[in-house]
Image (cartoon, rainbow, N blue to C red; front, side, top):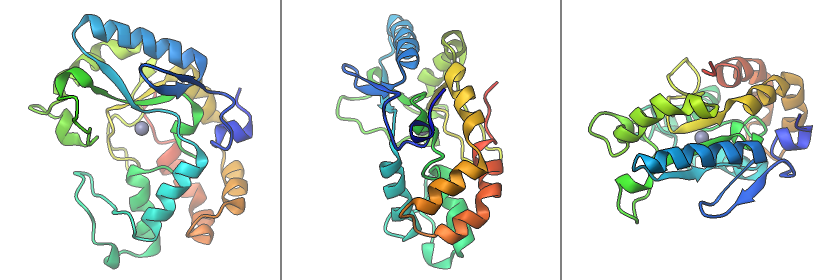
Amino acid sequence: MLNELELTGRARTHVVQHDAPRFAAQPEAVAAFLALREAARRDGIDLVPYSSFRDFRTQLRIWNGKFSGSKPLYDEQGRPRDFSRLTPPEIVRHILNWSALPGASRHQWGTEIDVFDGAAVPVDYVPKLLPEEVAPGGVFFELHRWLDAHIGTYGFVRPYRRFNGGMFPEPWHLSYRPLSTLALQQVTVDLLARVIAEADILGKALVLEMLPEIHRDHILNVDVD
Ligand SMILES: [Zn+2]
């Protein structure tokens, strides 16, 4: 079981850093991912961990950049939104379509890995992590067909498989279910309220007010079966 600092990304004592490929996760999730990666390799796929453990400060920097309008907000297709027309609650909801609330990101748990297929693209390709890459004809369409068939065997699920009114679909986001299911149970409105109250976060009063909605629509609202 993670302690509160680990669960909210304010410590990294629960994760280990793996080199080649470089990513960080809890030891059991590292082993499971490497087994999945080896199975993929046998089928000609280079399963690359693009993003894995992310700490609270990184998530906070993303949040504050988006809340202030210095980083763009995107719609479901990855097109920038017109920031000037949005009310503060709309800004919060639009941030949460693509980015987690600091303290509530699943990437803090050391159980989540965003992936792409390095064998399907040139070495200098920078993944966009957008639906177009995964759709039929997209560079990672075949990867995702392979993942459909194999991730369950290795304990992984896709929590953002489809739009349920919270996060937009992120099929590239894999979650190591045996550990992430436990972590999800530990994330409560009360815990998040304490973390947000202490944080240097833009929109703090509004976020605190919206926490029950955020917890319901953006944290519990995932596909983990
Ligand atoms: Zn992710």
